[in-house]
Figure (cartoon, rainbow over the protein chains, first blue to last red):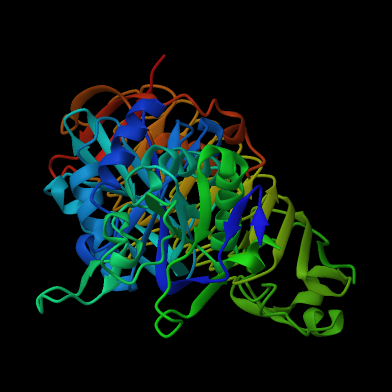
Length: 298
Length: 272
């Protein structure tokens, strides 16, 4: 398959089952909501090292938030509900409770819940106030700028993490340009996040290492500087490879985001140095979700 | 099916306990069965059909016409269904109610919504004393649901209230929210003396400053409280002036108390 001169490899992305939750952060304006959301989603690129994968899903106008203030919707993905809950509490406590003017609300509802403010409330040292409004419980925790309003819990759901595609280009800057175009388009897709810096990752990894202590190491088959000394997946005209990793609430969401991103990257075409689109997998043995590139783009 | 309708023939000489007349308890009953129900009337028992004309079939949609202030305990323990009352009601309306809806096109007596756990009671007129309060011997008053009063409420509204909301469009009498454990009482009219006396937790939200306040409440100043937006939004479903309040009116003066009893309650008065 070739789109606009860009070769689409006959391969697939391999993704895993995860648990996802959404929280809605509001503040006096979008600037401060974003400060809080960026702090909360910092150091959350990969569950392996960070415990959670998180990112900003969308900016919400005031009329779409529970308290009528400008907001940001954040998605967090963990390997289990328990792991997700632990990270969520830490991040609410350290990043949202501390952010001026912020409030946080559940962005998912259902039978399965994890704590949002249930334990954070104890920061109030006995001065915290509970309000049950409708079926939902909120905590009002007194802080120096007023009150931190926090819903007691949020729902979580089964989700998909690790959808991906690789952009192989003639130069580093051309790979980056293609990824920027892809991310700009993918940010408009709901229910997904791209958890790496700017949505893009350069250090694609393989399982295992020559060093026994390491569970993963660089994927030399895609390292352009090693083309001459390892079994490589790169042709001589490729100088740089970048990857976009996608976590989504469902496989449909991941599929939609992948298609949107690849189409945006391919729109730049061969003339802009975009040579190939590929995807990362583990031979299909580890992940339960397989996203075949040519099927997605058909 | 048409609504099951009970029409009171004449104003009774004695009080009538109507606790047995409840939609979920009448489920499956025909109008003839309902007419044979035994009611406590003063110091004797009579069949319902001796006092009321019974028409219609659907007990989940119960209408009481020509009601008066001697009909007690309507909707007591009710779990589902709808009761619509034309006229006044006696005491203990919706006592221990666990769900469903009661609408009164008239006034209600004392102890309205006492021990209520869920559902909604809408009084289009006034209600008596001790609305949502604990009856003597009970530890807690209202424990959930909504009591909406278009008119005025008497004294001791929400005494020992534990959860839920009491919304009064008119005035509230003296000692509103006394010994309150939690929950929300909001009054758009005037409030009598000593609201929140001995309250432990909960929120009293008033449109006007009360006539007097217990000395054991402390002024914490004026604040913009975000939770009020959620509270005001929750009123949107009600057929009431509460649903028409400005949802951005979040500025209140906050008093905390009663400091003689934990002091974790709050009395909020809208400002501006």
